[in-house]
Length: 592
Image (tube, rainbow, N blue to C red; front, side):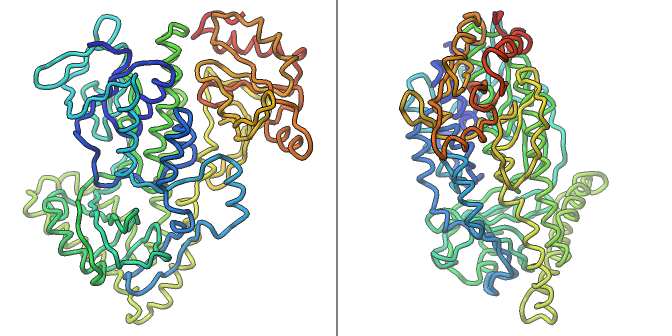
């Protein structure tokens, strides 16, 4: 059996990679060890950029996924509690600023959505099963990935059958066996061990007052409660040692703990799990013909919602490059730019996630429970001499230490002397957490840099986590706009060529001769001439694209700007040719 690409793992990164390759006519075999998607939730934040990427494969897919998200006005509250019965100490209302909401709505056809990964994955699995160019195989264990002549040999299953591929994408998760077998190490700290319970409760919150996230501080448990569809919730808390009951016998632990935390509300426990919160990045995203995507390449804390989304972006970055290499248009060295471009973005997301995690200490320190303390205790538990003590002895000590720390939260109980003042201190600290939950600036504003991106004389756009300022600065995502092309209204991203560079301009007649002189053997450039805007739209679009009425923006197949000019074709045409010859020719055939 042969295929151009074998994808190991059918999570968000693997399924997206398969779909984007199929869009470009490239066959793939997707190998997934599970027979069905994991029902225990993982990620739940689907940002607008991710939906835009799925929209590139098929608008019906993106729209069907977006439609699964609850109405935004029902998932707008982030709240902090002592005990749930005592009422919220304070909240962040994500819809409190209607002006910001209107701006965000103008920046993409999609809005950030809240969809549990346990209900997302069946949709993505259905999509890859329905795609003729994808051979999706469930219940398959990969035994080895080995170099072969002009490719890679993947050995699978008990019968050791082999699949020959030109490239392998390792999308097999945070504990990726493929990455480990390739000898690629991870660098970065372990922050905490986490346990979680997935359960249903029909009475916990009124339907019209159910926070998306509830941060809870009680003597029984300190953690976060995430609301999912159909009155389902996942509750997460930290622990210190793998022999503690939460890790060793999760069902028993949660059966005893949930009634205390939920204050007598009904519940049905569906599943439990454990995971390790880290901020780690693979030392290399590539080893020969093996490329790492998603959690196999990078792990983030859950504080920020970047994990799933960054894996989808990985797939978006590599898909068009694999197409160029497999079609013979580009050399294998083009794939080196995947690491060059994605790593700085991943590191930025990792830093923000870690910052969010420790910024929560502005609240926790009021109670005397901080993530800094948790990280130190977790590190100590994993090192000598504590890691030399048998689990049956050290686990009870870890559990006692955990209970002692959590007991400090009893001061939040309204019956406790001084609780009102303490609760007010926490309420005053809550607004400092906005960057944790609103990151539009990072979702849309990340920049690629490197050999495929032009240098620009203007200043690099200022970075802002919360607010996104659209720009065509090289490396940026092309700003969203609806253009008129040959009299038809079209989203700017829908006008981009999936395989070639797109020169977007309002002066197509002037730029067409420049493009026609570019050699056919180069990366390929197609001109999209938008009709000259009129009325109020004129100034809006000219300001948005930052190249005036006669300039042009060169956009890559993944929607990121490669080059731009405010000059006319006669003045800047040679600059375009020079950029392609200097930056792109090392990977592609000569441009002119």
